[in-house]
Length: 123
Image (cartoon, rainbow, N blue to C red; front, top):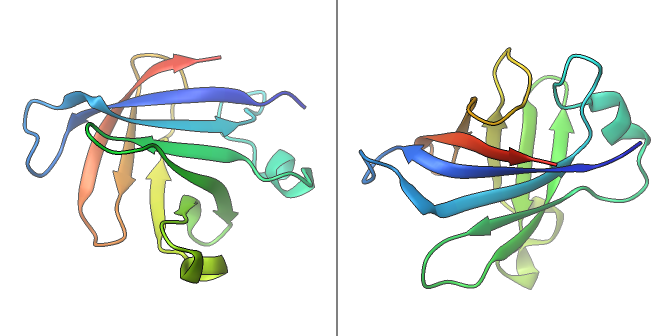
């Protein structure tokens, strides 16, 4: 199994009607034969899949990728040691198309705010 890094740039969302290429996510994941995130590979991998949230004026926030069959894909970000395994989750949905540059991913923050991100790189 090979992990690829999917890089997302903010396309639009609350407070960012024109988007912001400086607001990004980097998510390491494996893709299945259809080019979609591979849940079986995630479950079989003993190592966590890494993710980072990047925003201007802030240090990159590390996290890990999670998958729940009933709820889909998410990222746990550990802002404080007290967060532990119950860290708030940021949901992401790659939609029905293969993950490739130019496609869009919906990101829903723990507070319920939804943002659209454009895939700018996969590799």
